[in-house]
Image 1 (cartoon, rainbow over the protein chains, first blue to last red):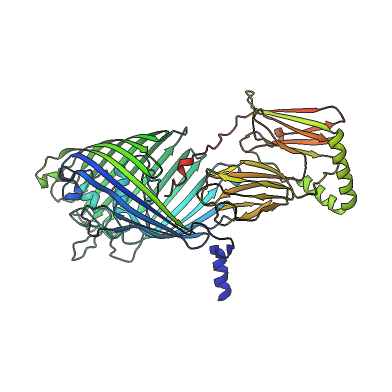
Image 2 (cartoon, rainbow over the protein chains, first blue to last red):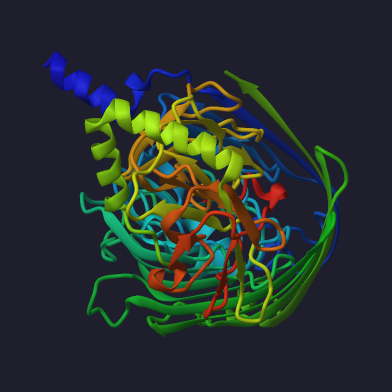
Length: 403
Length: 236
């Protein structure tokens, strides 16, 4: 038994000998906004507006206060916890958005394994490249990745096998990734009730979203959901990703609390190309469906969804200028519950990020969303709406390290 | 990208040298000191098909008929990490060289290689905390960082003391080479040409400088560029 444990510790890298550096890293982010919004009421405030703030929630706002801790348990095993506050009336003032352990052993050959367990983001976004799931390009995420941040958090485990090309003379790698998870059977309710949105307000684990308190993370049965994906990085210039997601929820399940099983599946495809250093071109596409109600029942609510965006970003010195075009739609194909959840729209985002000093960053973003969504009739609003939002942000980042 | 072969000839010389240690070392030391005084220079240039010089290319001269003389003193070298890049990207060392891996970045690295010529792992570190690694088998050692997959470096380990790297003009010169037949090899990770076209045989005679020019057929592969502001990117 002791020998087995010993072998396990060696495998984890505990017996590596040399002292591990940066045993604890704490990253903090304080993001304050000056907001001008010309919108219908935001979905976060009970409306169906597609941006984070609205006419009654503008002026000086908290963008996000975030504290992330990374603890290195052994040379190859680490733990990450990120806590966020948004000051927008969430159930809890502070919530945990990520909490996981990650094991990444040294590669013994061209295949490098990595395992994660806990709560973490689905590996979909090509925008959120920075700690705490923030983007170097814009303040508000694309419609596609806003949804990924809102309704999907892996509460489970992920395994990745990555073929490292360097030893074969190829500058790049190729990865297969797969995950299993639970508590994702509510995923679909937000996109069905609201349509697509563009925000930087992801959900927290076991949190709810907006003043309607849409519950997201619950599980009816013992069947876990899964996802599988592939990723290819070529010469540090090109990255392609594809992923299939299926939460395997029973659409017939519901409980007295009013929660239903949302059977949601989708496919995503993404590409990032950096042909020359200052220029980044990114595009992602998603198509899928969500359903509640027994299969075969003509009353089943069934909705197809799709979205894509294309982003171009130019970096020059301390400045980064980005422009993004989003296009999105949902289409209800069965069930009758009033005006159909047929969403059709597009959005334009222009953002300028400026590194002010070592810890300080300024950002300005203009965002306009045009959408047609018949369920707005419920609120006495016309189906067609334009939401425009201008934000100025000042961000302060700090880090604390302990060996 | 062609990789040099594991240099079975070189290993053969090393074994033979071990068998005839005393005489072998004496003659090679004599050969080297004699060469230092009166040996011949071998000058090599490497240029692209369009004539642009190629810097940082490894040049190795391997005696074909004679034994490879060996350095007896301790050789040491450094492979730094700076702005998430190995510096230099390519290091040429003689077998037996001990190499330090100082990390000058503010982020930690986890340097490793699983190349047959030298398998090693350095647990997470900043600065210089690990003792040097000795490279005692000829061949190419590809380096990686387990934290930053985009970091790739190379250590070319050779049994021959006659090695150099091209300068900004694409030129390299090895002075004091004793007379004899040699295999001249050049290699760099960015060169896409077939290994056979990167090898020549030359006859070195006393007094007359030997010039070897390599004109590459294929364009160079793209060079990685440091992106210092991105040390925390792609956390997802």
